[in-house]
Length: 462
Image (tube, rainbow, N blue to C red):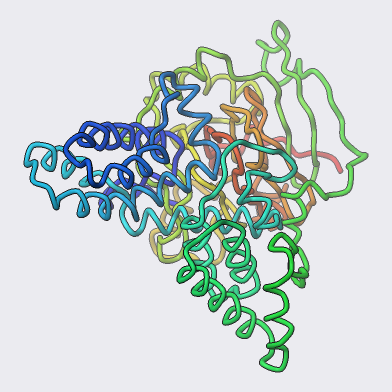
């Protein structure tokens, strides 16, 4: 995983960025409303857009966060800014007003890019796929059992259907095309959507069943297509379907450092091999305020993958002078050395933000740079992850091979050893972050390395 310093800012990869895009859209719509008097013959068209795009209750950070943390609001925001703004601007330019155009062109320069639109689409598609939610439910604001006020208009539904179709997931694409038919649309557009539904069903099924597919169009648009995919272990964890664990233990840790005799830490052992421990109430309110005091311009896109093409979130390395107490607390929790460890990084996830299955240790796909690093510091011995925020829905961290799921809990810290007692990489530590459905997922991360732990590493009896 690394930071990307060359690409333009993407809004959809972080709630922080989406909040700023919501403010920009407010300003954009304000200019539209100021121009209505000069466009009397077009007033109905412009008022229709301004009513959709204006967000009147975004005065406070909490209101802005709540708005963009809902995936339906966030997706619609990105789609409108990417798809609609240029169309509206071209339409109103039919009447000359240079000053107004100049200001709106300035805002257009801040509109989401094609890449940003695709990231928003990918996030929505992941929410649908990982949680196996019904498109009809998502479109009307029913997200994994919770009803919200936000809903998806027809353009949002069709664009998402087109994206999923182009990913060759024809069954899910057909579901979204059918859902798009729930809303009132022009006859020509409705016929086009019906054609796309039939093509999706044919590509995902059989040409011998075309009459069946035509009959489906006359059925209720909320009636779902059968699910044929067997869920993966990660998907089961994200859906809360892992079996209840019976071998957990909780205790107050008085022993790791002398300081803990005065202020013990509430510790929950989730697993022994590999060691996975959850420490409760170890991040304080003032520290939460400090690490969240960032803007989209302070952070960069965190990317992952062999081609560095998978965007995870927005990320920023924190000033070491501001994290001295947090570092001391890590020593109290783990008893491990922080020498040569990574700088603490803050991460904020965006629309459908998730992190696919991966391991933190350096595996066998070594190169010369990694070999040199391993020779100097050893492998990534342990990972420390602080939950800076609760998440309304989604955002769970799962260990699919162990069937362990940990929901974000503000102020808690999850620690796991990536290497076993012989300091060999442990594939059981493979983990994943489930897509955020609703909410803002903030975390701090730090990695501790192997060689400096020679005289501090605990060997746990099994």
